[in-house]
Length: 68
Image (cartoon, rainbow, N blue to C red; front, side, top):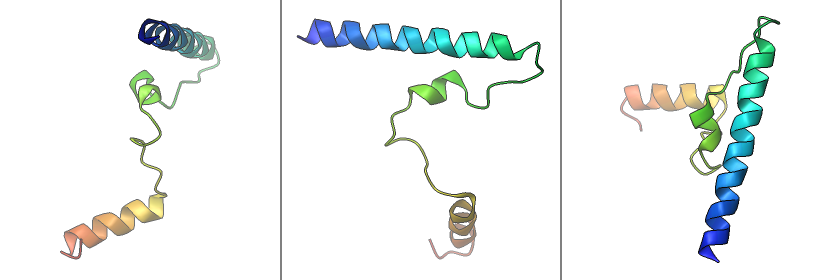
């Protein structure tokens, strides 16, 4: 069972990578680029920072003022 899960995850990762590269190459003639890096797409939802810009600013201000 572990082998099947590892194989499935590897295959999904490869498919997603190929789609990412294809999108990046397609955007070159249109003068567009991918906003997210490939490594960022590998992070799970728990690792992603889902705060808004205002929340980030508030956290930075609180940390600088000694309140956080």
